[in-house]
Image (cartoon, rainbow, N blue to C red):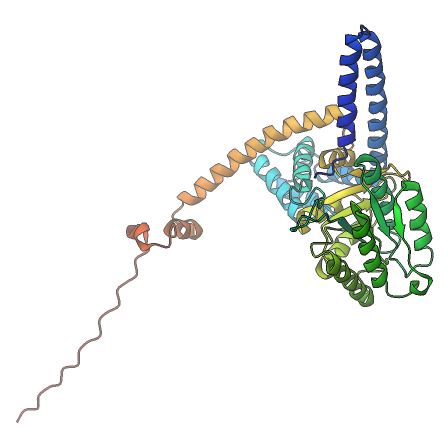
Length: 438
């Protein structure tokens, strides 16, 4: 089952088509078209507002990135190498990450060898490579569990981790609301943050707002080890046939050894009840922490495991470049983003929309950049091919010689004539014992 934020939109669109068909049959086509026009207008306003929030939230990142690019590649007499060196500094300082930065610079260098380099050449390549870097096919969707191997229904278990202040409780509430209202799922929350005094009360309030169930810790369990709360929550979810169980956790830094041990114990308690769980381990990070989020993700993944990120507070002073580094360099997909404080403000992560918000592109600009990127990357491809052919034709290129001589492990598949000839060693001389003269 794919958890797609557009599912509800699709259902609404189908309903509009059905409404037009039924009213047309009644001779009320004009009324149906008016209703559809109003529906489209309403949806466009909602989409525009969502994009505005994301665009505004990424303003800080965008201004720093675009101004840096303008200075680095300023169409002056600087050499291409000098401009690309400056551009590399800009991209790395924007937390884009080393892999994506290297790819962008390689593309621009190859293109500049044939066409030169101007300021307007950067954005098409930058946009295209950022979208590609953020498009993670593996694990981008939520894998909902329908049944176990023996045919018994198994809840999908979300294990939510992250440091204090990142927005875990808010994200859990918004996620529960979406599951309940968009997918019509029964959701059970586990208030397993027994460390922070107000955590249980806050999560309980979100459960009420989202109209979902919650398992609370006993008074004797507050401030103690949450494993018993985890066990009770999962057992209740199994007994009641819940579709989804969401486990909250204590929020401390990823270098806190006691917390790591506690999370590992909680994970083991989940697996004792449902061996295949947790099905999703979501790390919640604040969009304003920038590169520090990458460091957090490395640590959490090592000790607990991370299947995806939920990035919060992208409606504020977010430093959005780090998202690229997390996805491309670490291979961890971003699954959700928070763009506001309302309960509806948790969105599926959509790479193209995110990149255009980061770069400040409207729809028309995005189309122009996409078209230009295809043309530029075609030139890059042709340039790379020429360079590769030139290199392989050079007899002095040791790598090319090595490649050509190692086509197959089978000696018969290798042309002996192309192997470098070694000078034959002289055969050892036989010792001839001279006969003594009598």
